[in-house]
Amino acid sequence: MKNKNLISIVRRYLTILLVGAMLLSTLSGCKGDALNTDSASSNSDSISIVTTIFPEYDWAKQVVGDTDNVNISMLLDNGVDLHSYQPTADDIMKISDCDMFIYVGGESDEWVEDALKEATNKDMVVINLLDILGESQLKEEEVKEGMEAEEEDDDEGDEESPEIDEHVWLSLKNAAILVDEIASDLASIDSEHADTYQSNAENYINSLTELDQKYQETVQSATNKTVVFGDRFPFRYMVDDYGLDYYAAFVGCSAETEASFETVTFLANKMDELGLKYIFTIENSDQKIAKTVIDNTASKDAVVLTLDSMQSTTSEDVKNGATYLNIMESNLSVLKEALQ
Image 1 (cartoon, rainbow, N blue to C red):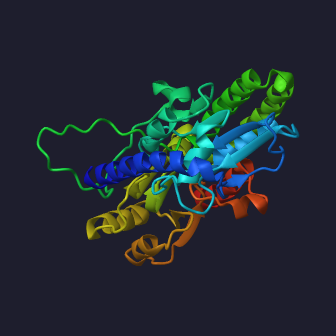
Image 2: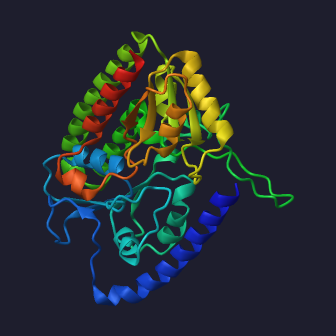
Image 3: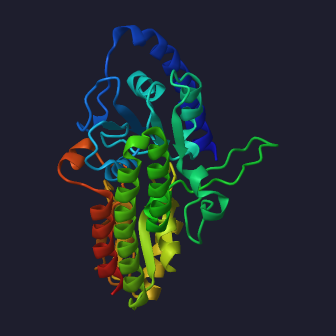
């Protein structure tokens, strides 16, 4: 896909430049502005965990609990989402000497390979979410009927490999697997607190499982089992977990911003056909496409609802109490309203 290939090339080039800049800036001893917990002091005995996105950050935070020798950082903390993030020199420095680095591992993270090559801590534990879940748990990006296809690269002989949907954190079932891995790997780094990490993880996984059951019960009792998104669709893992069907304007990782008349018309007709009264967007959407779809329905009175994909959760949100569990609980409330 042409747009994604260009973005990927630019990211990789910039990361190589930043790695070089990192070597120069090391002398200055500057610190980045990425979100840090204050549970650990900056002494040499503290353990440093660097995460790319909010779900990883919050999972690690739940596993660590009250342990006071662990510092957790989140790189994407200012509202920039995974697909448009570019690491700064300070970000590369944070990764370079941390004890544990957690990242998604999809196409948006291609810059990580170059960053890790220059890491000063050769004993760093690296957690790639996609690798932990494995092929059996992963899903390829799906272009559904009516969806706006991305512009293809016209270069002959260029064969596109299947693109994996990166949004694995939006499955509570996946979250339980990944939290268990974080706890196990952290225990291997800090054996003194291994029992605490495992206990915290078990309690948290129980909470994830309870919420997963609530999702299952909501969908089982729902009269409608289809959702329509006038937006990108990062919730493939969620809907597949519970047997929901969906239609959307774009795939989850799409760089497109304008939907064609054909796509808008298809989604509007689908809402009429199914008698749907709600259309979804993701967080921070201008809702333009969703409202245009509504304007093209027969009744023109559908309501726009928002599901939070946690791709752009900020440090301010964290300070205000945002957690992975309460966002997923909020998403369930929104979903329940649309499925009734």
